[in-house]
Figure 1 (cartoon, rainbow, N blue to C red):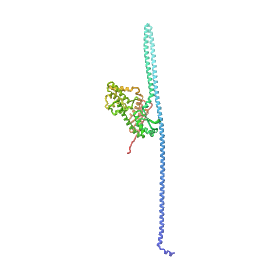
Figure 2: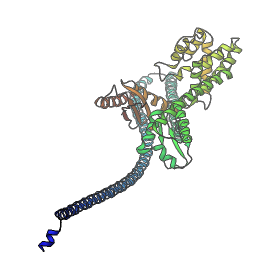
Figure 3: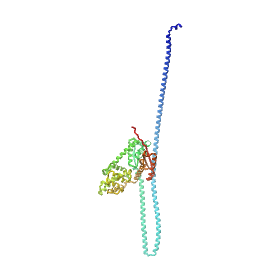
Figure 4: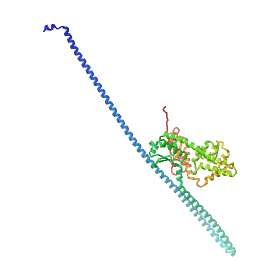
Length: 526
């Protein structure tokens, strides 16, 4: 054995050992590489699983958010539907209450008329009782005088007694006849007054309400009932913006295929009617579009007024009028005087004045011009203080109108003395045109004047931008400048307006003062 070992070279043994050690090292290195590779692979798998889990969590969260948003939209739509239903029910209730209020107002007026009649009858009875008492006293005095006369008659002869008795009988008969005639005249006058009041009351009850409705209400056709909801808008913003821009009251009820535009000013009502028709045709109904269309419609209506004035000037053959004057003449077509259209009344006065001037040998063209212009002040009497003759004459002075026409315009109601023969002609033609049967109706004029006075009172306060009388004069809607009137001052302005209306006006029922203070902020993204 030792011999064998001795025979193996030493380097070969060392090489074997080295190879063995090297093999062990390589094995260890390979094992570590494999272990690190497995660890890295495990780390990547774990990271991948975490990312997958995170994406799944995000998808679950997004799905939940989408479901929540969908549910919120459904709830909101349900709430909007219920709100619109409640608003419609409230509007119907308001309309029923308004009708009941009108009925109560009419009944109150009837009761007041009956009370006045009863008071008059009571005064007549008291007057008659007082007269009876006086007559009893007179009879007592007469009896005493007759007794004295009888004592004197005993000393007279037959002829003197007859003459005295006949004279006394003649005086008494004459006195009784005068009293009887006076009593019959008084009874006839009372009967005529009572009968005329009954006739006027019956005429007002039968026709005044219908005439007022025709003169203050316009209807607009709509394609379907779904359009009513679009006109009202979400939470009523569209209809509020429309009423604010036009100054009229829009009534949306259950009447199929139509809505009602109500307002005492015919010009405003025409602007509102045309604007509503254009909005329905356009289809884009929202506050900014409403304001844009209303502004454009106002321009179109102004052009229409100018054209109406030109047509009236051509019809009456009056030349040389300014466009501003022609526009005012056209505006008269939307004004009434006791129910009579002022433009047609002015044209009628122009022709009547020409006929009378020609018969008297005067210039018919001057009379025709003065007749057409005599009531032009009524087109701006709600903007300028004073009577319409003075307003019209002062306005025409700006356009170098002749002194004859100015005097006829200012004096056709006797406000100024006439200095030419044309002024009495215009006054006579005005009276003829107004007094013909069926030309005028006093009830509508009083109604319009009351609404105009209501707006004038509201506009007289500082900070008020616009004031509109709506709901047939039962409400005044006042819009104030938010920069000049704060919230605390707004309450005071509303209270002051209500107090002034109560002190200066006479009206049935009550008037609601609604004051609006709105802050509108506008910016542009460029």
